[in-house]
Image 1: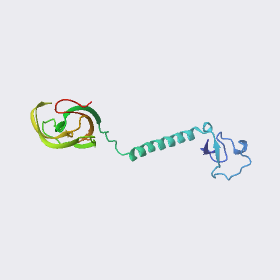
Image 2: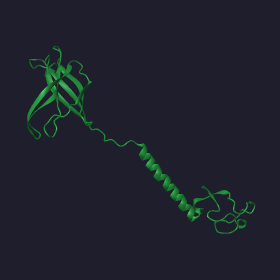
Image 3: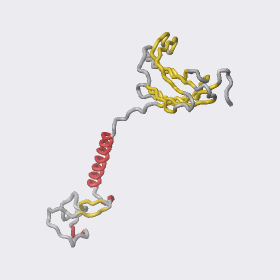
Image 4: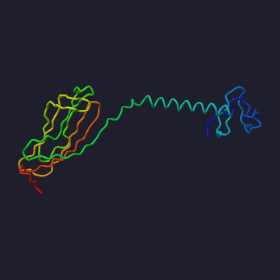
Length: 197
């Protein structure tokens, strides 16, 4: 139900069919000619065609402005950075440095881009992880026939008495928002090749 003016679009004193107010059940009500008619509740189906058109236009305007307002209130959509998870295993000897990762950034023109940020998310239970700066040399890497670029190299070292599996997690963030989570399991064995069971 809507609260509307019964007289719209006619002058007061007549109902929507053009009959006087005396014939439409409002005989007990009096108001001066030309004054504003009293507002009455009527069903949407009983509204004049012009009133329905005006209501539809008003609803459409509210919806359109609401959409524009909601779109303006939202921040511009940023692309969601990619996050990938890589699981791998590395074999290591107790009490020896073992390379567990090499991190570099080679651009399409075969030059070095900014190096990634490396964070130890979950440290190993027994050993230690160290990251060192280095120069990486490569041939036939992608479209690059030969290159030498700066890099980070991650090393793992287990204590002399430790044998078995050790797990760690490294987060590597590249420029542009790409993130790689590396879950590394290091299988530590004795220098003689025997592994603790």
